Length: 242
Image 1 (spheres, one colour):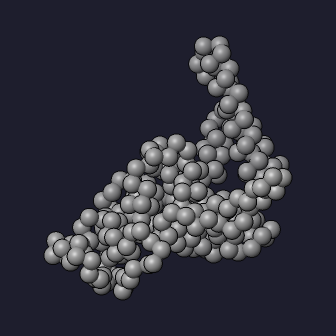
Image 2 (cartoon, rainbow, N blue to C red):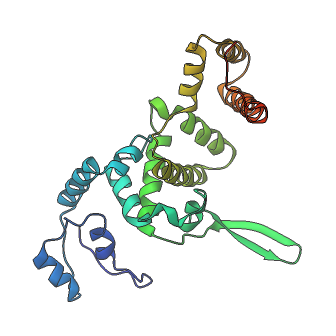
Image 3 (cartoon, helix red, strand yellow):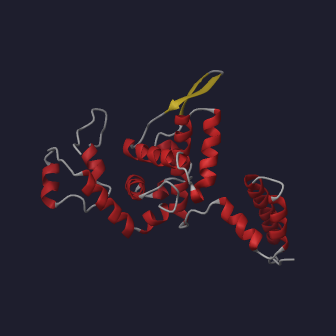
C-alpha cells in the first residue's frame, strides 16, 4: 500500500492510517515519518494489527455488533471520532463526516444538492463500503431491518443514494451505541421478547403483529410504553402487569 500525499488534505494519509492504532508504527519508522519521508506499509499487516486492536478494545467490540461493521470500520471510526462527547446529538456525526447533502439557500430558494464530503475521507469511504456490503448481503441476519429500509430507499431513488443514506445511518447508530454503552439490538428482537412475556402487553403485541408490519408495531409499542411511563411518573406509582 503506497501512501502518497493529497494536495487538498491538511493531514497526510500516512498520519491518518497511523492514528488508527498506536502500535502500527515502530519507533524507527516514527522518526522517518517525522522527517516527512514516505513510507510503504503492507496492507495485510495493517489490517491484521487493526483486527487485533479491535479485539482488545471494548468500544470497538460493541460497534462490531452492528451488521456490516467489521474491525477496520470500528477502529477507523473510534480513531477518527476520538471523543464521542464532542457531539451533543448522534445525528451530528453524519454532517461531520460529510454524509449529508449541501443546502442552497437564497431568498425563497432552498434545495439540497450532493453530499458535502466534508470531514475524514477515509472514514467516509469505510462506512460506504460497510453500507454497500450490508445492502448487497444475501442473508442479512439481524441486519434485515436496516437492509429492508435501504432497499426501499433504493427502489425510490438510486443505488448510490441508498448506500450513502445507509452509511449515514450506520455512523449515527455507531455513535449512539458508543455513548450509551449498549450493543446493537434489532427492533424485531424487542418485539419477540415482548411477545414471549406472559403479560397483557405481550398478547397485544402478538395480535397486532398478525395484522400490521413490524415497523408499525414497533412505533405502536413505543407509543404505549411512553404513555405508561408518563402515567407512572404522574401518579408516583410503580408498574404492575395485569
